[in-house]
Image (cartoon, rainbow, N blue to C red; front, side):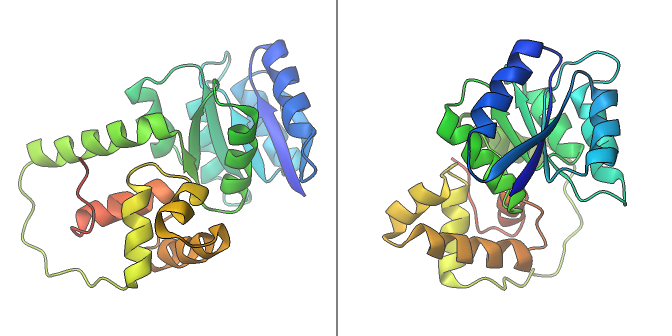
Length: 221
């Protein structure tokens, strides 16, 4: 059972998310917070597996709250950021704060529940509408930054299939979509994804893709 904490300053949104996600057989809504400070307090007292975190809240915003939760050595809590805004600065700030996923509130119920499961499983998630833009921004930053000192070749410990999965992650595809492209079962994709994350020491899917760009396995766009 996935223990879920919902943090949003709008009562109607909190209630709606609680009804939608609480109806899933494998998700239990254990608490609701109306601001970032309360989200941090409830994360420490309730010990959820996942926090669904809004960004723009009073007292403490969701990015600051995410940073406090993910940096607490006594907590093992993943944060899924939900917002109505797809502002690049918000996305980068949330990911820098340690968020394991970022999803726009317009996502349908199945996508929302799937994102919670993905984050709880340590796979992370990122709204497909944002993935390519974030990767392009990352590449643009690298192109305008001062040239780094030459580094020795990075060993690539991945299998051929793990490389296939990595490159499809860079397209923003879900596990099911990757399975369809590779003509394998979703469980097989999950197996290869787990190996990919472990071998690249990545916290989530996006970190794995950024690693792939750094070592030249992924070419966005």
